[in-house]
Length: 241
Picture 1 (cartoon, rainbow, N blue to C red):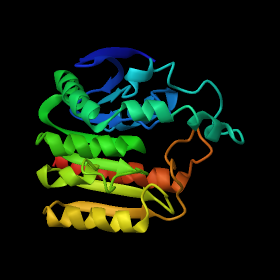
Picture 2: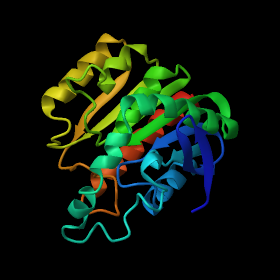
Picture 3: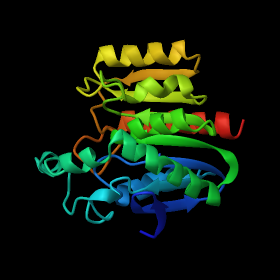
């Protein structure tokens, strides 16, 4: 995995850079910047995009240090790995994300064609995708798949910033996801509509949390392939339309 380095206000973040064309910022899940992310980023890049996937967990270690060294498809392995994830997520506060995101977008624009960009996030990355779209008007397409905690009671909940966004959104929620129960999905849809934003806000049937990650026991091919189809249609429509 060939990585570049991005200087943020808080330190140095590694990032995987691939492809050419309009820019897409790829926000990883909590499992880390690993071969699965490279595979997914390369797939998006093959559609004709420059894709940047930063190690958003850099405060807790390098990409290698924050990624699993075992097979998360083995019984109990994913659950055991997630016992180590809590402190890493705690370090990525909303304020920390607000400092990081401009650095990531700046690095992407150094390599991509044009100024307007898209963002996509998976699991925790979906929260970052919303924050990016809510903080930079050049983010014109945003997608989040099996995201958790997109709508909470906290004053800095990701959805609170949506009235500041101008992107078109696509959300593919996991089925029966404790991190995005039906009420939260409904609230997200209402906030998007009230903000006048064009959006798809859908639950993918039978797709569990983490459905897009085929290196874990949660992989669900129908949901994963649907997410790629929806993402490509969004990017092509907005960044190439």
